[in-house]
Image (tube, rainbow, N blue to C red; front, top):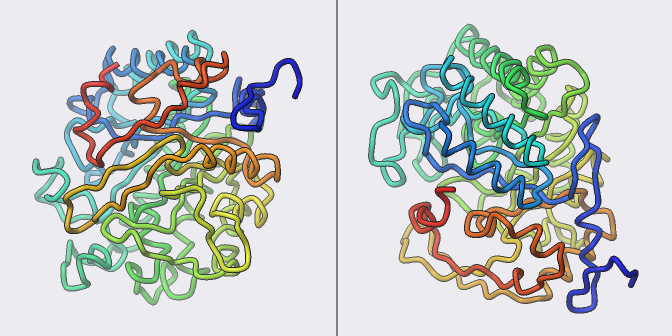
Length: 394
């Protein structure tokens, strides 16, 4: 190993701390902060506490911060009153301060544009009603998801005019984000939120231009990317977060073969996506038979675009008492990091996103970079946003 190596169980971690260029954006390290909802923005307005929270992670060595889901300008986009938005004047002023402070701390930051679609009302996760709770939710076919059964309706299927209004809201949100100083734009199109509901044949059973085969089900997503590109031009990176799993169904597999994944990803590349954020719950789980590659590796192989790998990096999990989502024990094994670096060396991903470890330790990246390998000691936790609130305020 070279003198600048960071040895860990026989592998060198230093490649993760090299710069990476995403279009014109120079990232100081390959480590991203994964988007994690905090609901610390009353009235949708990020305050000084939010700016300090993200700036600390930038100062701690994170290369690219991806914000928590930030809702676009549509009446039924937001799931909660304290979720930040990217359209109200006060919120935009708040985001300007966030971007300023992150840049002053040496980091880069991407906004995650969010429309929760039919999942905005979820009493099991969020007991308080969302903004405009009296209005029907935005769902391609008028129902929630597989776990809720098709009889659980949230409203009538939207008209063309209503669909176009949401697409335009994504474009406006992207333009507003760039004006605030964000370096990149990510669309949350995974976990059965917003665009994901339109791409999945379980939640989209329309038979018009917005539904049917995969090409037509992708129309909504493609038009969102086109609207964003038109709003921000060709040089601001557009990141697309997608997943196999869904809220309410961790076992969902809309992409059963590599061809299914190709049919999903290629239209997005053609529309202008620069980077794919492949959201998995365990990065080391192989995606398709016949290959050890995970979802990120397949996205890289299929598209050749920049790819972010994520999924329980340096995390061990304790079982929960949830009957809906029983969580098996996942002990941390140093071989997980060895496996991660092997995948990096094989070119399966370009960037790696870390979530809950950065909630508990904003200086984690710099500590590992400095050779403090004890910082890689896994953070054991039980699932549930409230479990980390005491660590995550700043």
